[in-house]
Amino acid sequence: MDKTSVKISFFGAAKGVTGSSFLLKVRGKKILIDCGLFQGLEHEKNRLPFPCQLKDISYLILTHAHVDHCGRIPCLVREGFKGKVVGTKPTLQLAKIMLLDAAKVMREHYKTLYKKSKRKGLEPPLPPIYDEFDVVESFKYFQIETSYDKPIILSQERLKITFKDAGHILGSSFLEIEDLETKKKILFSGDLGNKNKPIVNDYTYPSPDADFVLIETTYGDRDHKPFEETKQEFLQVILETFKRGGNVLIPTFALERAQELLFVLREFYDNGLLPPCYIFLDSPLAIKATRIFLDNPEYFDEETLKVFRQKDPFNLPNLYMTEDIEESKAINNIKSMAIIIAGNGTLSGGRILHHLKYNLWREECSIVFVGFQPKGTLGRKLVDGEKTVHLFGEEIPVRAEIHTINGFSSHAGQKELKEWLFTLQNPERIFLVHGEEEKMLIFKQAIKEKFPEEKIYIPTLMEEVPLY
Ligand SMILES: [Zn+2]
Image 1: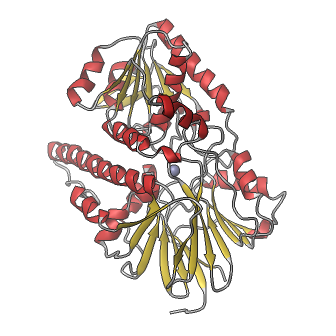
Image 2: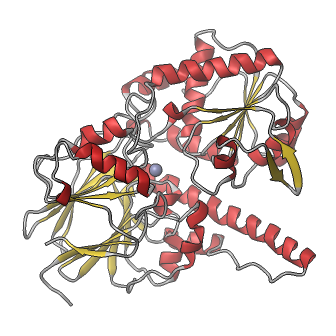
Image 3: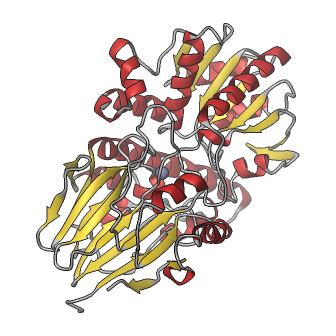
């Protein structure tokens, strides 16, 4: 074992957007940064074993609670991890509900595939990669709660880790890891946020003297519209759909986006901009996440805190939170003047599929995408203009208007990624991660104005790179 060097391995989010996980080997000691689920076309990679001994990983540091950053923790624990999971309070709270939900979704998906295989006389599907028991078992390791700008020292590894506000979702962080032996600094961007969004603060900036950086590049190729414009665009779609006599369906992620949508709808309502209508938050997970948000107001930005001091920023009188499945089914009887927010955000499962069945073929309705649609998902197919889709064994024509409102993204656009990265004076190496390769190449071009090309590197999956 090499007792002097520091190396990094890319266990996920290498030339891809999902499965974030990086192993840092520091003089023979190991820590893992994130342990995300591969999603969409990459989901088969979840079955690959972790390519190292897990029992000697002493810490798993979580940047935030999205499943593509924490969703493989139950596998990690089952395969031998005995270390401590570290994250901010909202990250640990939210990660728990996200993992329980992931297990439930996998179990339901398996049941569907199993029935199908029986019916068609095919090989049975592979069982889910974990179940609720594995998830609850993994909670034992959720041991260190931290907060922004209060460094923690890992004494064995001789590392100082500072969590800094990444402005992406509640409790999200980027990490500054300082090697106390060599004074070298390594930055992990986690996911960086889109500026001027409600609920969370804008991202903070890294120390200019960082030596190595891993930066996400989800939107490395483009800028988002300013948030004010985005809100107007959203309101227009709602008003026009209601004028046509239809419903507005919003497939959404339960975490952050759902709360943002509620925040914005409440604002419209307070300003008298919404006509009388029904609003449904039809997602038990989003409802749970909203409660966790209300439990962590110290992570809100000033604007949200101001509202919070007077009332619930995520509630309005015509909002119905439907936890019960029968209540959810009842929504199908409503033909117009309803805004239906339901999971999941990429249409790969969840209650939104039932609502699509009742609304997608109606030209008076609108489907509004407010998040990134990875390749291989039904969401991407609709965004790419597919004319018919298969739902519950039926072919459904796509007649509803399909809108993509990118300004809702919780990810920094190219301009913001550059601004954050350009804070660094003279890094030795910049690793581009968490992005589709073609977007990374565009981002690489965009940052060449400040950093020489030979310092910018796009790692491949499972690659190990020595840092120093
Ligand atoms: Zn994220």
